[in-house]
Image (cartoon, rainbow, N blue to C red; front, side, top):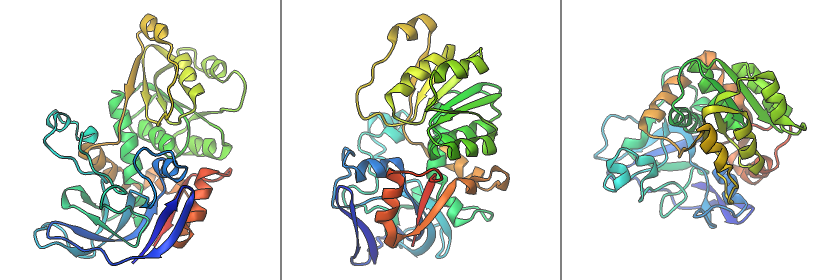
Length: 339
């Protein structure tokens, strides 16, 4: 089968390898689409803590079932599916308290023997394989994983209907976070980004008040337009200045949810947290509850998830696709690889 192998930092080559073996409790998926995620960018740039070359990147996938292990029930060959791409041990303290998403022994694609999704085929387990609904397209189904990230962030932030939300960073996760907040009945949403195309999408998809992050005195402008400030601020990028901005635009008693991956230490205004009782909340991927909600939301055409897909390139163009995502143009949002 064909794979896109990252052979060195910043370098992907197409290779042929032996077909994957489908074990008795495995599901073999013929991949149709693989999404490129922020963690793939970190790995491509050599900044990922454990995805190191040589490695097949990718963990977002949609496709159809090609083969089923002998002990697998509830699935049929040809079923359109996607995957919640991690397995947890079930025994560690975090699993025992219901936090499998931060399992101490969690396994993910691109580590050990579990090959990533930039490939013609992908091995999954039945407990993490989700059938797509009858109204879901495969190119939309690949968005289940990033949508589940957004859903989990909203849940971690204890969002309630009628609250106001600010989303700093309107990449795919930021856009999906804003869209989820709208679906869950946010009273108002502000969005910042460096690219006007992303901001236009935010306005179209969920009626956001939009702000180009390049403008001077960004926080002052946001607060001028919304003097009560925001109930929850979602950090969906990893620029250090976003942390300062989040504290400037969140209301007293509000919450800041850190969805983006900050790879370097960040200075925090702890006195501000104390005097205004601001909560700083971490969020890490998702669990089955979040993933099922993502599958359900993708069934609703009114949400216009397809608007996020800006480019679809063949798997053989994985190098070009990664470079495109690492150095995005004005119209680059979600990039998919098609097998």
